[in-house]
Amino acid sequence: MDAKSDVGHLVLLGAPLGNPADASARLREVLATADLVAAEDTRRLARLARELEVTVTGRIVSYFEGNEERRTPELVEALRAGLGVALITDGGMPSVSDPGYRLVRAALDAGIPVTAAPGPSAVTTALTLSGLASDRFCFEGFLPRSPGARRARLTALATEERTLVFFEAPHRVAASLADLATAFGAHRPAALCRELTKTYEQVLRRPLGELASWAAEKPARGEITLVVAGATGPARQRPDDETLRSAVTVREEAGRSRRDAVTEVAVEYGLRRREVYDIVHR
Image 1: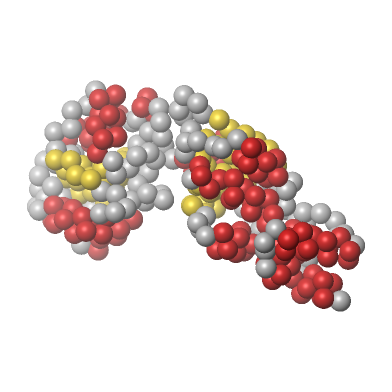
Image 2: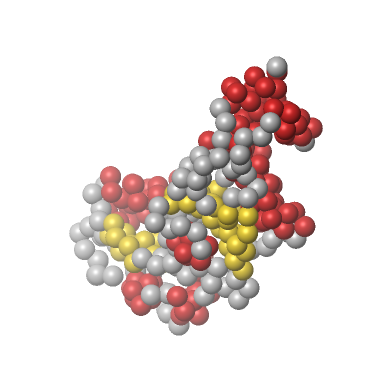
């Protein structure tokens, strides 16, 4: 970083996802010269610095979800004072489902230059490893924790034609995959990417139904990114009315409301919700 000036500047650092060898030369340089380093986890930063054999000479402060709102004004004041500030998260680029957006927005509003030392991203790494189409994709971050909100979000996304990328916590991945298989169809191609670039990296390329079964039987560990193929049309040919009624009944017996069950069946078979509703109530 440049020496202290009238106005500081903010640098967003792309941190390795797991393998420290993925760190760029520029990341090393910025860590060694920044006046202040804001880290999502200061202990992880210390470990990364040791692995990279970099001495962080600037002041280190924590910057995570719990203190982001309070600490942002402090960092902006440091930038106003002419300090060079670096922002680093546990892995990947700041602001991508990690702290950073609030500080970037505040710095830009204050007229402070913002740049990046780009680096690894779990989104694009998982996308390219998935074997699914990558020419058009959308990133949905973490799905809602509430089952009802999660199913509603997936129902809305079921007809999305672009490849979809999600982050998910290990303890919720089985439930999320089950809901994905219901909303998108069990045969939709997908990939579960776990512990990317780390020693026990694992990429499972299977239909959603098979991934849901795997996750239900074998609890996953580590950081998980899900990649799901976009919609290409109805998941199946239109079944007869009795099959549709049975599909709704199965979902209701599993705890779905009549409304949600009808919506899920309509999405799975590429039918209008009203058509399924009329068949069930006929």
